[in-house]
Each structure stands twice: as C-alpha cells, then as structure tokens.
Image (cartoon, rainbow, N blue to C red; front, side, top):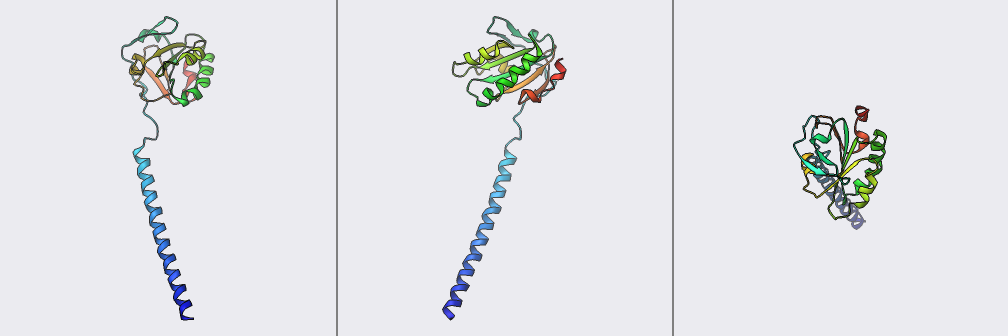
Length: 176
C-alpha cells in the first residue's frame, strides 16, 4: 500500500511540473507573438495623399508619352508586377473600375521582372494607358513603390489624392 501512495504522489508531482513548464512555454509564445506583431507594420507604406509627383518621363505601349503632364484630370493609377500573385488577383477589379471611368482616366504600370508583361498589357490596354517598365523604372520611382499591387488617385496637378492596396478602397466618386 505504501508503494501505491508513493507512486501516486510521484505521478502527481510530475504532472504539476509538466503543467508549470507548459504554462511557461505558453507565456513565452505570447510574448514572442506580441514582439513579432510590433515589429511588422500593420499595412505596407504607401505614398501619402497630398504628395506631388516628381518629374518623370516614360513611354506607354501605345506610344503615348507619360509624364506629369499626362495627368490632365483625376486619374486612377494601378501599379502591377508580373511576379506578384496579388497583382493577378487585383487585375479584374482594376479593369472593372477603369472601364467604368471611361477612356483616358486610368494608367496602369506593369513592372516587368521576367519579360512576360504581355498578358498584363493585353488585359489592361482596352481600359487604361499601359506603361511597361523595369523594376527601377521612372514611374515606380515617382510613386515610390516598394510593394505590389498599389493603387492611387492622382489629380490634374499630378498630386496623389488617395492611395490604397485595392482599387475598391479608393474613393472613386472623386473621379466622376
């Protein structure tokens, strides 16, 4: 009988130690998760509204010259990359929005990292002026793009009036 009591006490002590170690690990994981969340920005940085675009010049696929003078009125701008899966997902949203605005009211910039921008350009050409450029191209620099996709509203003075991660987040009522 005394062996049985000793065995039960030993198993109880082991369970108590195990419980304490488990609670310590859980507490440490929570601290670690909080630290990771604090280090990661909640949202990627976008150029702030009110930022004037610097001077740039680029050529569109249809031969149009795109510069600060291109923005003669409110314009929807989409920045895409050929290697970005989210860009493929947002492409239909952008084309729908651009189509609803009418001709000359949208600009699409495709950063061609693998020389396969043809599909993007073909999908965007009917609804927007399309510029295909390398990763360090003039429009990417002007909009200070550090991730894709990114969407902007630009007024007739080449000033960014709104920026968002999806076309649906932009106040497109300002364009009509």
